[in-house]
Length: 372
Length: 214
Image 1: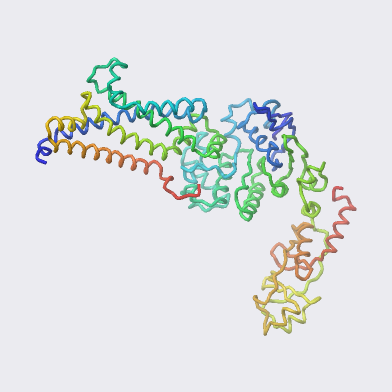
Image 2: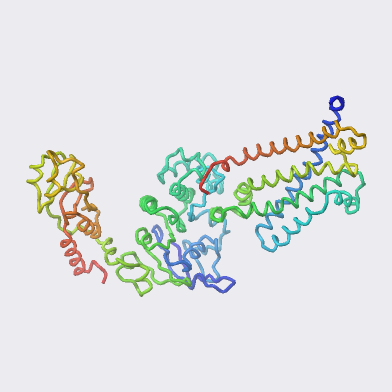
């Protein structure tokens, strides 16, 4: 647990970067500091490992004042992932990851062994270990950065806009990877970003900071979307927050209706007979959806329904883990206005329409599941 | 040519002495320039004083500095220390700026990452900053080396004889073979030491030859 007690950082020229910040960061959870530039989020992060010293106030790490320890000793017990990875260009990937264990006295061989395990853990092939950072892609470098921060198995991990310099698709993968790692490791992670979507995706709790280093709201992502405390937070959380809030509501209660299916390779006449409301889903042998056929699309098919005859489908909705958001999106993005529901194995189990999703939302509101 | 063949031993010993006169100041100068350059890279006030001061030192003509040395140091006129200390001064003058620039060019995120990993300042200097500064530093050292090897010859004018002796003596005796031999050997020495430095650089910085994005 990390506790900020009335922490203020004021620079010599009078600018206040962090103003009287008090908050408690839960152990084993991801806490995100988010806000526009100049809100003091990075400064707050760097005060935890004393890269920056607070002007006044106290920061407690597991109940102990962080100033009780030598800064270098303190930092060796706190993982740090920096923007652009900040890898040491003159060391191989393996030696980069082994940095902190070597600093704390592990032998090179032991540290490298552990580093190799960690590379695998963050999803990098072992042979990358011998390369230099310049030979890696941005996304790979960032993974190495995460591995390096984890090398000494610190209970606390600080991440300073770690994914902001990689392209959106890679960033998405890295975020999923982080969540997967975290579900195994259960570290206390403090994550800084200017991207509210990233904050909502990753954070167990999100601290929204405003310019001048003042805490605007500290809440769970669902609460932030549903009940922003003021106009600043509401505008920062952004458009579509009502829609995005659906992402935190389980779709367990949404009724799944029938959907017409046609096997790939079926004869045109047979396929035509299956159509329901003019549409049917084409599935492979395992029942996984491949696309749609309609009255119109079948009219140009000669004998059997092949892959090239399909109308591409919308997003899929997993009945076991899906949220109201994925259910609604599946319905809205489907060419047949019927969202395809799949099971964990990816096989089609039925269809959802937007109306039933909205009705489920109304039910959730009535039973108080949605904070209002 | 026959003169050269008759005097191979003499030329070789002059070459060795020439190298000794040139390279000892190089090592000393580098050792002095490293902390000065480090201070200059870290503190603005130090840079403002040290870098221009170093530049100014380098503008003093070498012959003048050689002649002044006995007056400043109280050494004998023919003492080789006069040349070596003057060349140390030049080396420092050349390298302070190089060291300062090379250290300042270490990427800020890398430096911050090193601090965040738990390096103490001195540890960080040797483990991260210095290795990363090596390519730039080495380029500066190569210039200083060649400069020193050529300046040693001027020492012959005040009686400290490296290969410069072949030049002064050759002029006095109208012995062109001796003059040419001296010039060629000085150039060969400079090229050879430079090649060694390039090789050392390749061994020490395998990472620098990888074409990377940053």
